[in-house]
Amino acid sequence: MPYTLAAPVSSLLEIKKSRFIGLVTPVADRPAAQAIVERLRVEHPEAVHVCWALLAGGHSAAVDDGEPGGTAGRPMLEVLRHQQLERVLAVVVRYFGGVKLGAGGLVRAYTDTVAQALLHAEKMPLRSMGTLHARVPYAQEGLLRRLIQQEADAELLAVEHGDAVTITLRLPTDQAGNFALQASEASHGALRWLKPDETDPATSQR
Image (cartoon, rainbow, N blue to C red; front, side):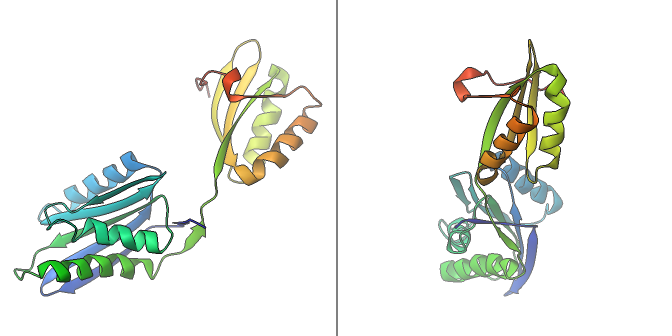
């Protein structure tokens, strides 16, 4: 079972006068990960390397940022995989201390920095999410919105107003069946669930 992190965790290692600052944090996707990496570059302008590894949405990345190939990003990525993490970014900021560590030393340093951060991590199961589309009369819009607000982990994505109201929501797939049944019963049959090919991407008018 894949896991993600409940909150970011960090670490600090000093090896032969080089400082390795680690951050492992949950992320939604690659753009979010790259934004965090760029923020750390700004926060640490004197760092010689900002290396990172990402597992998110089936996409992975391993960036050595000037370190010898395969000595930073890849070892960090393997730590994430070994702990069955997903939607997680690991970043290590290195301040060079004047002593070269060699390839083996670098691999150990980057591996240990991420592993040390994860010692303090709270992992939680990563739940599969699904998207539902519902069409309801205007009179039922408020009811459906309230049901979405009351459902744990459900998120209102978009609302489109036309002849009726089309609402798009996201929630864990293991909750989708019960929620659909509850909403249908609460609307006394006025709600219609749409198949993906029955609706265009809705434009939010929240």
